[in-house]
Length: 214
Image 1 (cartoon, one colour):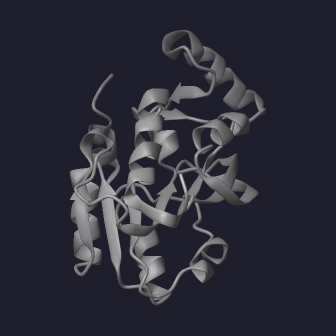
Image 2: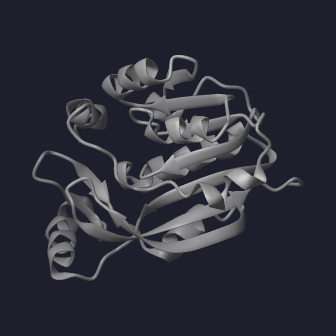
């Protein structure tokens, strides 16, 4: 499988991310001094929105060097880091909120997704929040056709290739519950997400809390 960072580097400056952050689900739960990490921050779109809401203790991580370059120019006061292999340089229990927006769709391997969520759990302080928003399986003919087309190649229904070279994944909601089972669920909202290519997809926004006691 080709290094996914090459695909996202190619998209930098050429595509706009479209999954909308739902600030009312999470930001009122936090003090303005909260340490917030956008994991898979891209070019800084969501961090800009959060900064405009009055939060300044912000951090971003991404696998795409081109996206990070754009983010650093847009938000020079934010600390950014490359997160190859899904690892970050920050200390354990050092964040009040970790955000993952349309990240799972970009990380198609189940074990890689589990490693990503484990890293988010490590980074969060007890009682800290995770916000996840992503794509779910669709039942329209266009999506069903491509899920079926690529299932033999990747061994999982919901993974598909895009004409521009992307490899993406839509998820079953029960799988999402399982992936996030170590968190205490606070909110789960069904949504429709616009895709980067102008389509509409099933999706969700989830807020969970890291247990205070193991």
